[in-house]
Length: 556
Image (cartoon, rainbow, N blue to C red):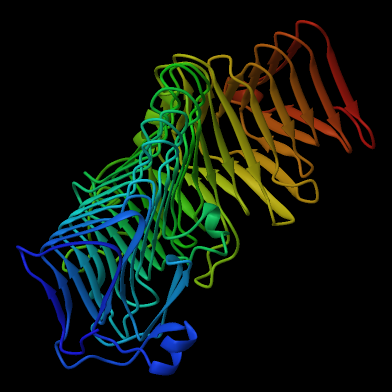
């Protein structure tokens, strides 16, 4: 312990069972009681710096603690623990000569933990923790080197980068918690602002199953053990990989923020080459999500996995300068400034995953303080063109709508489509723009409320078309529109009032290769208007029977 600083030079070599190096102090009373709390500030500018080689025996530990801690050398703790910590106090829990836990409390000005070298804790744990005060967009934890917690005899180890409540956690190097024999390990990045820089690699792959990577929070931001980030940015050439390499399922990878996520990189959660299903991937923000990156949760020998996108309001868009969806930053701003005011998902990112057999769920959650209510808007085509069957789910807390001339469907393999509105809103709507074309290549369509207590309607603006395998429309607030067509290769079931009109030679049609059933609590009213302009035509057909049931009204 030296308040003036601790330096292990380039030629330094230390081989020990355990090592603590710090610019802080420990009181004699605490030391005699076995209470190892490092506190106090070192002299101005004091740092703990390793440029040499620090190594422990198996199960050992190395703790470098101060207000600024840096490693550009090598730190090796096989089956043990490596801790680089910057904060007001650092408390060590020792048991039988081993380090069982470390806690870092209190923030300090200009806190910094950085690794530019190699930290290796095979079958062990590595923690880089810094708690800075009023750090704004200054870096508090920076990894530009390599951190390994690989598993040689079992599952991978654990790596944690924790930047506390202020500042930036920057990952531009390699974080590796892979296992060549077992399941991948666990990597967690926590902090106010988190940046996965281009070229960075964050992996928890495993021979028998993928591991876990959490950036900015747990699944849907609901893990109380992981602090939610305010902002998360993943650059284009950054990679996160939780794949199973031989057998087993892909793992879990999450990018989460409370305020802003810009996902432009690549996340892999593939199933094993010999057996196993794809894993789970989430790229979400409670508020503003910009998602144009690539996800692969495919499985060569099993079922594709899941990709969840879960903002407040979101629009599915095509590429172009008008959306800014593929931009790293807004002009003249830092990387944590949103590139667009509202959440956006690039349509090609969704299509690529559907082509790989990955199920994609776009889900909106809750009412935001900025007035967003949980709407999903589709303003660009989503056409599956390759691969096996896949499923797209749009689950909105409030409404679902599309722009005009939008197509959703498949040309290769079936696309199963769920349109679920009103997950929390009592009266929600599904509004399909003019000339909408939903053609699922034999896939099933379900339009329904997000939960059984909600009511939902579906409206075609003009000349819309739905064509699927089995088509089920559970619409307690009714189905309506002008010159629309609903066609099912198999069964067509509509539960709810049905209205519609047509003219100018257009067809208002309902056809089924199997059974057709309309079950209305009120009336069924389908009108062919404008006889002076060629009129219109109403077509109702079911190859295996037609049932029209107007429980409390008429059929006209």
